[in-house]
Image (cartoon, rainbow, N blue to C red; front, top):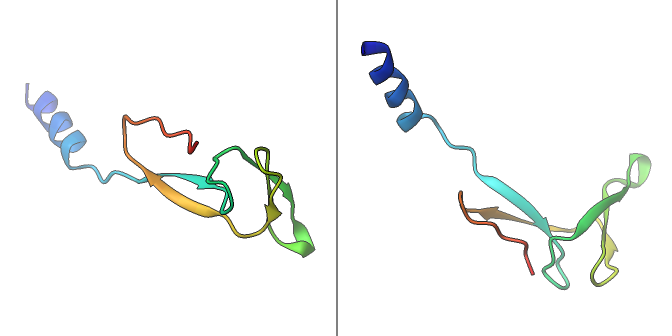
Length: 70
C-alpha cells in the first residue's frame, strides 16, 4: 500500500520535459528533414515549400495534443 502511494506521488511531481517540434520559418510546416551537416552546420529541407536553411523554429507542444504544424 505504501509503495503504491509513493509511486503515485512520484508520477505527480516528476518534472515533465516539454515536447518540441521543428517548423519551417517560411510556411510553418513541421514536415522538415535534416539535409546536411559537418562543416556546413545544420541544414534542414522543408518538403512543403522547398525551404533549405539552418534557421528553423522550435515550438513547444502540449501533452495529449497532436500538432502537425500545418
